[in-house]
Image (spheres, rainbow over the protein chains, first blue to last red):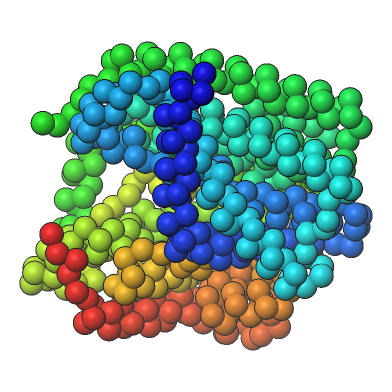
Length: 266
Length: 262
């Protein structure tokens, strides 16, 4: 078993190490995300206009957590696209590994390490912010634990979504249009553009259980208010179910696409 | 200017060769900006006002920004993607040609797929107008037009900062995005809803408030600043002035340009 998993763990480790080298990008991301976080915090302060201070505090915290883990939503790995364009994909396909899992483990590493490299400094910077736009502490230690576990599942979930996205663009040589559309879809429906909690109440049941909400929205809701054990477990099961369903779909699409892939160049 | 006209025509011709792709990309843009439109609609359904502005008025501001920004990305594609030409060495080719430099950079690319974004922006403005029952006079039309023009040049100027930075550092453009894309997100809403630091930043440093918000606030009949009407007409000039200033800075950058070599 361990023997079988080894290539994937190594891929994870190598990609994680690589990600730590992009410190300049992380710093750039940090500045950008801090700016957007502050603008949104002030915007919501204006929109709430003194009504419902608790709601405003929750929304500000929601915004900050979204900004902290923004990198996880961002599909940056254009490597496979490049390989398809240049033809070096042929070498990758020669590797005796499951291509989908191999890509997922690399993607997981990039998303996790990339997100942590931005989230941890942002957490420290929070102390320097004016109190009215600072994020609040988790509802309870239990809420923090629930959040953390759910967030790990969330990152698994986003990797599956991104693998599906990649399968969609594999056919086209110029992937930029479709890619940016997919990432916008992901950002809108995972709550990065507008907190999903602000959607009309009649939509709430629909919007919280769709797959994109499992990535960051579900964990953040736990952070904001801890959930009773039963509800929490149901939430985790929903996350796991989506991961399984998306993974099955992704694997099917990958198998189809890779069978028909054209190796370009010479 | 003749060069620019010629370059743009060539660009259009080359795009006309890929009609299906052009259509697809426009639909994609339409959906993307439509997603952002959805976001504003959600917020405005929830809160129904921001500061002194009603939902429809916010929609007007939002639409103007989207329209202007999309127009900028369409016509100013050569500037907004300039960093790539420095990275790839394409800028060397441009330097060699005996034609005005800035015109060449602007004429280097055209991005008509932004049409989708422009349509959403224009649609938002139209929707806002219909709900607000604005009585259109020549003056109001003129103010809207110069707001769009002022904003257009201002955003081009901001993209030029990114372009200038790319002479000194091929990477880390992301940070400069704060001014362009951050400016767009912030100034989709009128500046007076924000606290002082942001107001100062977007009034005096990147003057979105002067070039766009002030004239539009007059169109909506709720003046943003208490200034004489003549100044309201002159304020959008800050956009072109900013652009010219940044062009000078960019030319200084060109002097420091060292080819990346290939």
